[in-house]
Amino acid sequence: MPDNEGFPKVKESISRALIRVLKKLKTPVPDIGILIFDSHKVELIIRHYVVRNVFWELAFTVYKAIKKTFSGHQIQAARCEGEKMRTIGE
Image 1: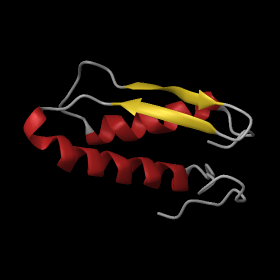
Image 2: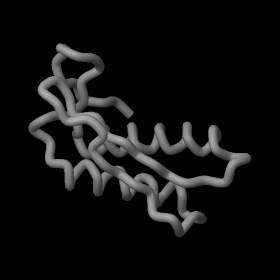
Image 3: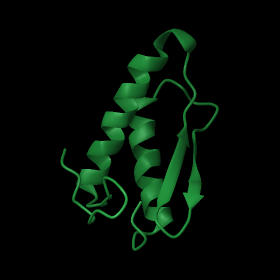
Image 4: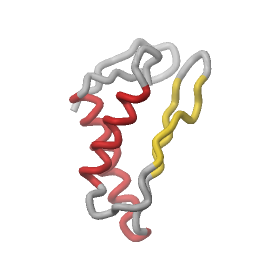
């Protein structure tokens, strides 16, 4: 997550993407938080709960939905340490 991006905006964007993907799963509510905050990066953690036999299928669907919502809300991200921020494509 870029330093100049507000966490509430990012969290809300991710939450909305998860609601669309996890529409049948009402509880527990997914956790979205900051895992690492240091001088080089802000790393997010997203814990969504799913039924065991569809974990990987749903995990990849969630990742795609988050990437799409970042693109739609112009939330940028660095690919690796030291790289410039880039717009995330759909």
